[in-house]
Image 1: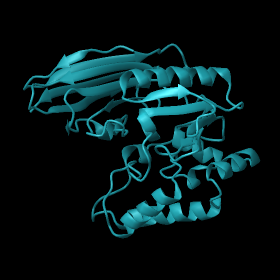
Image 2: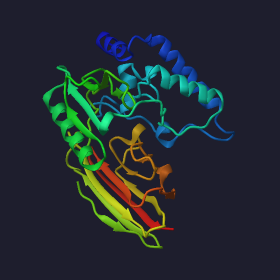
Image 3: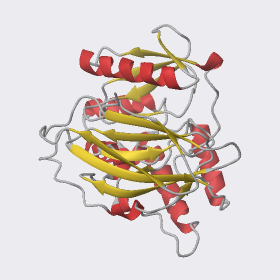
Length: 309
């Protein structure tokens, strides 16, 4: 880890000893493995995927890999989440008691942003191209969620967006100034899409995104946002059947598909980018069900099926 990266991490941890935090997270992972049901595995296809040669891949690997290269991943929950002491203590208690949890749902121990309004500002370290991407992404989220993002450098509770070593942030609103680190490779999304009407039998949708002639990572994602509607009282089911030109990487960050099926819309849903995820039928808790196809690198083709039950 660089000196600047260590200093940024220490500031972000708000007085918590970094080495103590790393040890507690390491112990947390050990407990998680031990408490898994017999025959279960915490490994996924993306965990087992061969990591590409980072020297030949533009701007490095996935967020988790980038954080590992930067030397900060061991200090973060699941490689990119900065927990408060209270959130970490709750996780430790739940796992030591054998309580099951949903991956990436770190804890509900955090205040909600007042009036659903999130204040943020840019640190001087962040360049204008990344600032423009952040503004564009937050405008996209504001138009499609119940949250409003407001640029305000003096609000009591606000997010400081800065160029650190790695990509990480807190969960929810923790009070005061909280950090969100965006290094190279932490780029965020930019659309096509349709409203799809499900039937009792499977229907198919093929999405081709990207630019096969451009060998570099683009500044923004190509997105295709579909909404699958079913009759009242019915549930939407989906499954991916074909993935071409899709890299199987941690976090599925270059290309992939995300079905928004969880009742809590703000939680990140599992993303698909690996062969082992093909033909897995998922039943959604949402009607309509949002479907997000995305591409940041070369060209990808994804076909998925949908129906209602």
